[in-house]
Length: 188
Length: 188
DNA sequence: GTCTATAACTTGATAGAC
DNA sequence: GTCTATCAAGTTATAGAC
Image (cartoon, rainbow over all chains, first blue to last red; front, side):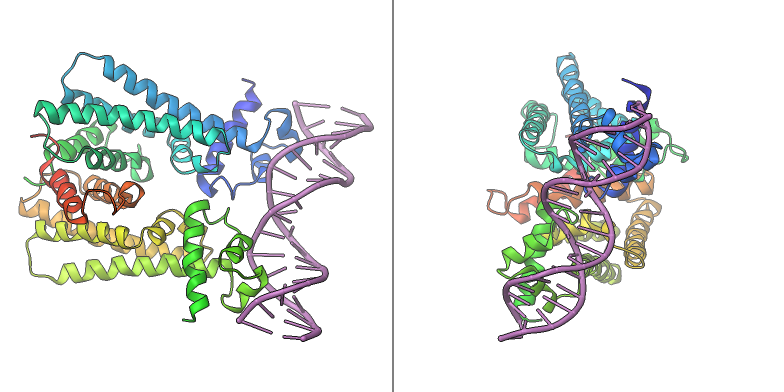
């Protein structure tokens, strides 16, 4: 990928994050990469093409991550730990694009929207499968698998909104704290 | 509030939820309430006025809710339970406006944006205060208060995205399950 | 690959008749 | 209070010179 093209994608992600996809204009973007708006189109096909790349790149990262965890020969609880860590590390490594992935996918047009939702559904089903197995094995509390799935996903999906790497908390201790809270509970 | 005005606010919330504030047009809205676009302005002042009402009405519901919980003479753990239930019930009672409140507040213009953020900050500080007291008293695990605050908020803030009241799960059992997960942990 | 110019369209909101 | 007509500004994207 050309250097300018890469710059455009990166700045677009920032812009989409700050203003939202719809409110971010190609004029804004052009200004940030020091080009006239029309010149953007020598590098990219359309505004939505940028959104597509961001959404699907992130979706694939999650799908690949869960596949590799599924294959591992480890205890269910450790698979869940690995999944939660996967979410935290993806969110912290690339907070900008993960925000767009989380919040702006709905502006995808068909058929991309359907493809995206299918990928997401697939991911959630795999995640739920691991939870269900843990309940069956008796190592997890017998809580509705959907509730566990979405409570875990949600609690971890927005870490990047408030966690700043420069703070006193390291990523390691962040992971430990969240894992302790989710696995052992808030009560002493 | 006039009947038509009420209808406009309600449909606007739905529309903002479905498409996002920026992508939802006054023409869309007019069509839904069976008016010509210009006629909307006999009932409302502007598009943003609708957003303001949605955001501040919800924010005040949370602030009033936490004030009433603070005043109660009950154990810290019970205050936390009450807070989590507050979030769940607000989200389920009015899923449409809570989505707009959650996701679209950033399209508020100044000075409303600052007012809104101040309200939110105030709420979070109060919530964090309760958590800190629980840690001091020794009834909660010694986990960073920010991590607890945001993990709780996030896990519960998006319940309405996946919980459908018509499902087999009642609101009561939903609350019990989420509370059990957050307070006692996922592990058996 | 960048520019100027502009097409084709959508946006929120207003003026003024009825 | 609803309408028709319309404005002014903003949108993505393209055409074609250099």
